[in-house]
Amino acid sequence: MTVAYASGKVILFGEHAVVYGRPAIAVPVTQVRAQAMVEGAARGRGIAIVAQDLGQTYLLGQAPPDNPLRQIVVLTLQRLGVGLAHDLTITVSSTIPIARGLGSGAAISTAIVRALSKYFDKELSPRAISDLVYEVEKIHHGTPSGIDNTVIAFERPVYFVKSQTCEALRVKRPFIIIIADTGVQSPTKVAVAEVRRAWEREPSRYDRLFDQIGEVAIRARRAIEEGTIEEMGHLMNENHRLLRLIGVSSPELEELVRAAREAGALGAKLSGAGRGGNMIALVTEETKGAVVKALREAGAKDLIVTEVK
Ligand code: MEV
Image (cartoon, rainbow, N blue to C red):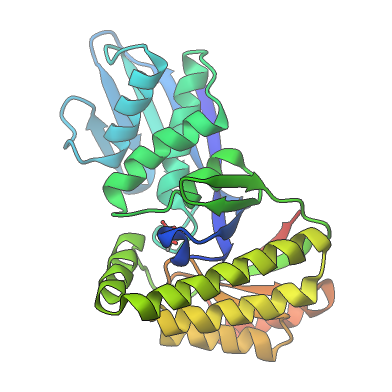
């Protein structure tokens, strides 16, 4: 039996614009994770995938072709060159909330790839794992940038440009982020498709906004590498303002962003696809308690405090 894990992720800067080739920054969130367990099954049973959280079991041969669990298992076995004729039970579970911008789908896929490669004793590089997961992300997320699978497979802060750059970020001074959940599910695919339609209607306006977000991400990289945390806070506020203009904020996100800033956060913004899901606030040891309290009072459903280092 083998077990493997993959952590969640959060985008600090550049969501949406990253789909259109501008840079973005994302970090792993190790407080939440997906798990995949692979064990031998009775002879002739074939491959069964147990989605523990959903209370569902799929037999590989009978699962619908568009089932993402089936897809990642098939792609991984092909990549490992071991064929599909095995008797296995693959059990997956996750503590990462679904459709909240924390990369739950990519993390579950990554855990499966890692567990299968361990089970068959065939090592895959983070790049190879990321590429496999991206194949499934493309089927389920419309036009994903690939940042989710990249940060989750590499498990470190990344500066990312679609199809071009994936650089590990040096964090000069560790900093604390509070991730707060609006409680509103927002599938990435829907938000990304709506932004695409808006961009098609007004391409020059949206391209300008994407350019501005890209510039924020470049300046944020510098701030992270130089340890200028107050500057990061300003840039988060600026990034949020631009995301609002793109049309992906929501009343719930606005309320949490406002509460965090008023309670002393250095900066706050929505994170991920928007329209719901999570926001993030940059805090210090001194302001952390007050911002957590304010976010709870403003209706945050779940809070994760994480140190980025
Ligand atoms: C989703 O985590 C981030 C988006 O930028 C979509 C993507 O990059 O694929 C909204």
